[in-house]
Length: 210
Ligand SMILES: [Zn+2]
Image (cartoon, rainbow, N blue to C red; front, side, top):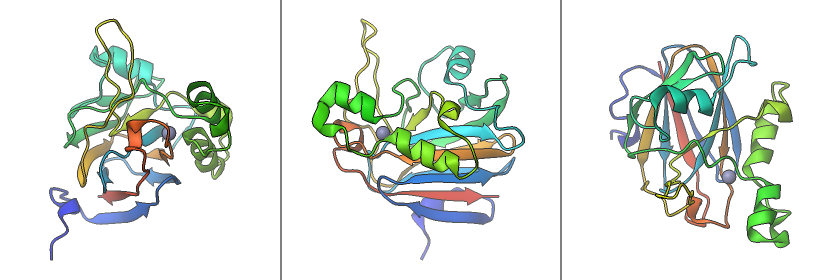
């Protein structure tokens, strides 16, 4: 039986892993390899950072990426740039119209501000980013503005942001080609106080093709 989640990936599969709901994840992706993220159950925000494997002080820059393309949203064809202005990865395919890079990562601090003090002990993306970064010796100061794949953060006419119901659906995918050797660091978002995960965090699948 063919696996629908790998259709369209041309190279040999070199890694294939399910990231459980609410979990951190990190992986090295070599130049030329493609990482496919599968939103297995739909409307699951995947918070995402990228570092150069050769020198992790070079990392994803939302500011440079947005400025270079003159648009706030990440779509098929978007080149994800580093703080040195160099391409880290390119979005080579996306079954979802656009992805967010301005909404940021959820934290205990933002949760208590937005949703009340009772959310203080809830697990958040910043803890996941910190845990996954610590595996390789990076710390809090290495966590920068991130990408939120499959998260819908529209910008209203007056400039206001919203975190609203997702536009993803079960088994939709996004493909990212590494333009240099990179480290990707992921938080499979544990948020339960807003609709970014449909109030129900779910697993995602990570497939790397050579
Ligand atoms: Zn989150």
